[in-house]
Image 1 (cartoon, chains in turn blue, green):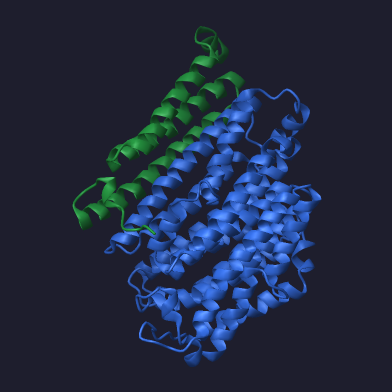
Image 2 (image 1 turned 60 degrees about the vertical axis):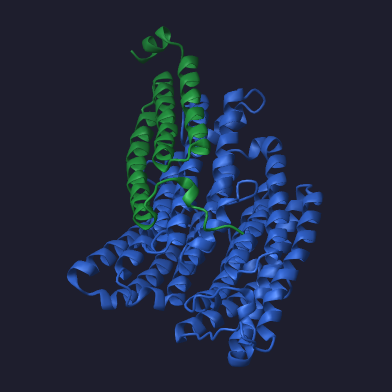
Length: 457
Length: 107
């Protein structure tokens, strides 16, 4: 709860900084605020307090995911000093990011469908603006517009689903819903299932799982690269945490009905994301497709729906966010030259030897190769899927992650090739170097002690 | 009071009306090419939800549904404000609001 207040205060301070002319100190202020937020979050660990007449419930699940979200945003700020500082809209961007982070925290700690809806919207509306924030460039406009339109469309489905479920149960509260579902497990009316189906469609749009993924590559490619980094990490983590929280609390009793459907979504996402990523020449678009495939793996944790799901999802989102932040550090520095092709990476390692090695390690983590975090993330997700009897889904997952290894290695190989005329100069600032080191250290820590996260909730 | 209204017009009629409005909205978003009309169709979808929530709230005599409607109206207003701003920006760049202009991002 304190964390929500803290994040909102950061946003308000950011907006005031423009009026009161202390924009120069805003960047360090925001970083301190986020670090303080992390501490505030950790202090609430284990307290399990319900707020606002049971609208929000700060259990360990909510706190763990909030900490992942805030930590990711902290690293995101370190990654983008060039994008934020000395930009005429620095204050606006900082405010929007803080508010959307507040929305993400609401999304992981809701105990009522109203708060789920509000959290999604607080997060999304800020992100629509951020995606379209490059006003003069048509690609950014298009990306913002597509994101807005499909986001609103998906919200419509989610709301219609919520309305139908409300019509059957007469409540928005998660616990009362769960009680209703377990009491009437055998004779739930068709309207309830219709509502559940529409909610699944709405949420699948938000997590960009296939077959509702087609907006993601366009939006990711068109948005300014730092914004894409935020969307691929924080927005995705929040959407998955909300999805799992809703289904684990309310609908785990009728998993037989919805889990096979989500299993098919998961299989299509993994295959489509990985296969289409192979064909991409642009690194940014390739990452968009790879994020779809990662959505498939994360969906597997929701499909499994047992006592290991939440820990597996937490580890996976953390590992994925850390790995993505490292690659996006590379991409952000690339796009300052206006070039985002994989081929232009040639000769990168001859100039930046240490960054090349660091990025390779996080790339191995994303591809799922031991002993880095990504491998154990996949391992735990697969394990919980097997426990629930989805062996075929795990087979699809293993096969598609082999395809994933292929295109991640394409980047690594490009980095270590000699330079040619397509190569561009890439330089990292000090804080970007710090991000590269930090992400590698975190991936290795999570790789050697995965139980630290999976056992925590 | 609430249930007497539902005796006059049964709840099923409200559900049908909301479903039809929602379907019109979905069709509009998918098939119309003018972005302003698409916005209107998204609003239609959200208002179908509002109608449904109000009807169910009366049926259950529970104020929660009506509170939700207020939240939806407020959020929809904020959303459209952002959406129209993006649209104005696009219009300044290409002098058109037709959705077929937006095809710069393809693989």
